[in-house]
Image (cartoon, rainbow, N blue to C red):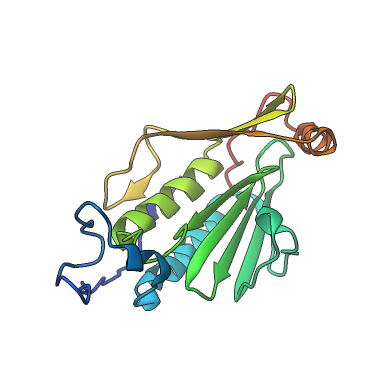
Length: 215
């Protein structure tokens, strides 16, 4: 299987207006209150779109999937939102998790995988969050490649939905070190929502499996 390679990206350091420190370097404690309602230089997140383009091309070239370039986004992550572009990838095997990638005008990226899993980069983007763009790119690559590797798990027990994403030891990423580990969370569902999620997961009774590689 060919490795994924991040496209060449230059991230110019931008200085915060008030203290001269670059974004992503962290705030002294306590974080200035005014930074929670301020978004400066959102254009610094533009590399997320470039990396998402590269990830999409890699997935289509590597795995046996169908691609919908105009998927519905109503209700994506529970709320409709604007996207400048979106693509839904559905593996040919029914027990492999589908994945939707949406490019938002912020600029940012939102992911929907499996039955319910949602991820976003950046999560917020305000100055208080002080996101390190390099780390956001790492997280985006790790998340997408882990989903394709079968690392997504969704289970419903007694109306509790547990979602986890496990990053395999080897994600086939060229040029950088991956962040091996896992992320998980639980949500209490209503009875109708729990039934709906169980129905969506019925096609993968043993959990989501790795995507089939293209011949």
